[in-house]
Image 1: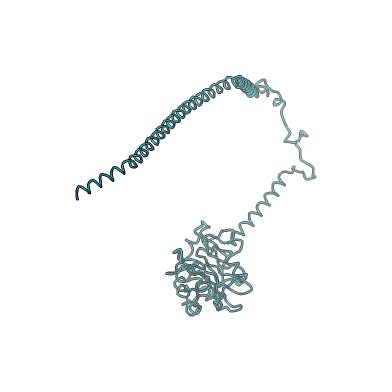
Image 2: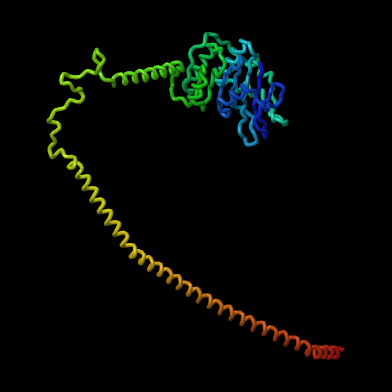
Length: 378
């Protein structure tokens, strides 16, 4: 029996490994069919037979302690593929499927998958995934019964009982499909032996063979009713093969009395239609008058709109004039400030000139005073 595992590393994405720790880039066709049948992001289970080879797929088995670089729990998926002609492999795969449905398989697969700093991000100890190390349980081999589908939450325990009791059908195809998102139509199209999904609302098993019988009965009843309708629509015939008529010589469906052809004024069609005609005329007149008034009032509404627009324009012009006055005031203030600065600069220049002149003229006097002080001290 061959085993394949899908998992991921801390920063590496999910991929499949074979028993030689090699990454599988192109999955076998039977793997693709099983994975296409279910959503691998959620727990699902598929038992599939192709060319006599029986395979079991179990997806999204959560690990206990392994997380990725975004702190999400890493999930493991496993495929066990039995060898062609090995009937003993069926009992093993049924036992593994029972453990998956019981919630026991995830804890047994988890120790076999280890995060590593390699190309795939993980390694697998395939010895731990061999059937002899998985604690398989014994199962019976009663002949498979009819095909059934139902609600996953309601019938999971019954499916476990069926896997313990019945052998799988011997034909190729999808035999067991369990997935929360699988549609009822997909299970019906694949003619699964057992199919469970939360998309099916029935809490009891739906017998696919019974569904076929109902469809056949419906088709037979439809065709029979059509024939009866066609027969009943034909005229009755006498033994001679001609259509039967009453003694008067006229067909029964066309018999009528002279009184029914005499109409009173109350039965006149014109009187019956008169209220509708009057209502139509009144409605038309109202529409014409309303149309006339609407178009007559257009110039007045346009004139009113023009006046409103003119008021808005006048208000905007007044605002512009006010802003212009403020700008002129600000310009005057700027000019005054510039003149003040100019006067201050002139005053500072005069003070500097006076200081320079005082320094130049006062230096000899200061020197003489210093000499006089020196003489006095001596």
